Every structure is written in structure tokens, then in C-alpha cells.
Image (cartoon, rainbow, N blue to C red; front, side, top):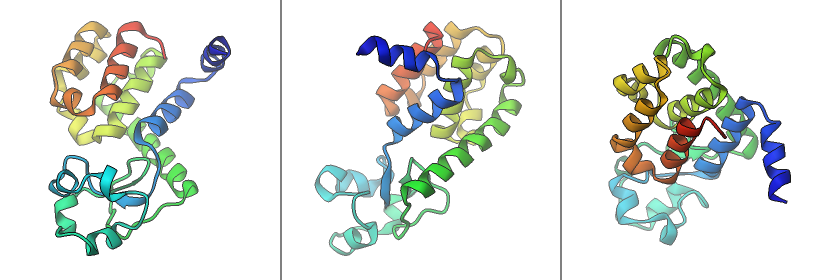
Length: 186
């Protein structure tokens, strides 16, 4: 069974891998939910309040919290642009936004890592995943790490990833991406 799964994964191209990995990391949510690091999410955790499983505007009516305290609001597969507590995404809308944001990441990555197209497929997937998760502006702040990717010094890039606040905040996703950088395997 595991051999079949590995064989199937080895036949996927890198864009299929990154889409699959983002879906798994972000976990589709139909309704808007507050940023996990926000004041609102810390005071009213998703495990008890059901953020993402019912309209956030309804949850807000039953608690002592303000919409501003949950920014940035998120929906679908981790989408945040223009999301409010009233936002709802069907799976189709979430898939559309996922592909749209990944395409946007590719445009930004060609600027952030000028030799992006010449990178190993696994590295391309890692960079797109990081860009999706952080956004291009925050990823751009990883100057030394990005320089290591440009130089194809993947061990230094992995160390730069590990030494970031992002790594501590993101947990298993960051550990998986660092492993991919070190092993060049999906």
C-alpha cells in the first residue's frame, strides 16, 4: 500500500505536489476564521468555538470579541485577501483561489529567486509553498535564505528556514519543507 502511494507521488509533477501539500497544510474551511495567532483566536480557540465550520459572524454574536481582533480573517485553503467574518467559500471557489494564488506566487518567485526556473522541482515546490503561506512581501524578508536558494546552497537555505520565527510558528509544515530542501525529495 505505501509503495503504491510512493509510486503515485513519484509520477506527479511538482505543481501537483505543491497543490496537494498546500491543501493538506491549509485544510479547507468553508467559513471565515480568525488568524490562529490573533487575539480573538487565542481567547476563543477553534477547538471549542468551531471557527471555519459555521459563519464567523454568528460566532462573534455569541462572544465578547470584535472582528478586528481576528485579522487577518482566513477562508478556503488559507486565503486572506479581503476576507471578513461574513466570507464563505465553496470547495470550487477555494480551488480557484488556491490555483490563482499559486500562479501569483510564481510571478513573485521569478523576481525573488531570479534562477527559479532552473531550480530543482522540489525546491520550486518548497518556494511556492512558502510564498503561499507567508505572502511574497514577508517571504522577501528572508533575504539570506533566498540568496542561498539562488546559489543552490540548500543546506544554508534549510538552516535559514529553521532559524526563523516562521519555522517556530508553522510547526510540521516548516519541518516538512526543510526536510524537502535537505533531501530534494517530496
